[in-house]
Image (cartoon, rainbow, N blue to C red; front, side):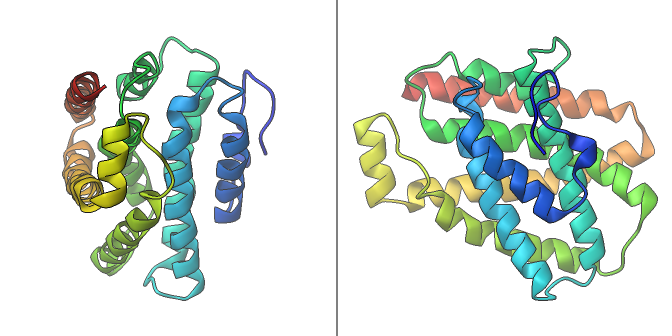
Length: 234
């Protein structure tokens, strides 16, 4: 599944949710050697979320399980392509993902900012594109109900994600351990809000492909604000 550069991940060869999970697991062991540590927390978190999604599919909790599987595979491909681009240092990597690479230069920045930068790029920038492509091919019934289930699983995953990392700053790490709600709730509710925005972005993109410029600009501005927070708290 994972091979040598310049094509680190064979994206086209990923055809199942199991394949997606396998790549996440492989990356967990490779990112440090690839000098892509800035992706580490996002990758581990993405694995947690996808594992919960897979379990929900197996438990028949979705109205459109085949569509959800297709979505997981298609959506993850955008992230894997960003990993390929970062590993290969390609010049045309999208700005929202490039901002996560810029974060790597901030040695004392809070770790949770890397998660938010990854989530911003993948949700605010990638998700409208993924939805546009999938909805052109398939328009499943009761999709809003499935999206609600996914949001519930995302919030459930947040409780597990908060335990995946330690902050470099002793005070921030103390606050994270003793007052988890200060990290968990703001971050997860921000991500849920971004998912709502991404749906709006999909609606704009479905009507006008030129909307991608606005989507990219807004996602990049969000990333810049996160980098400012990283510098202030670093």
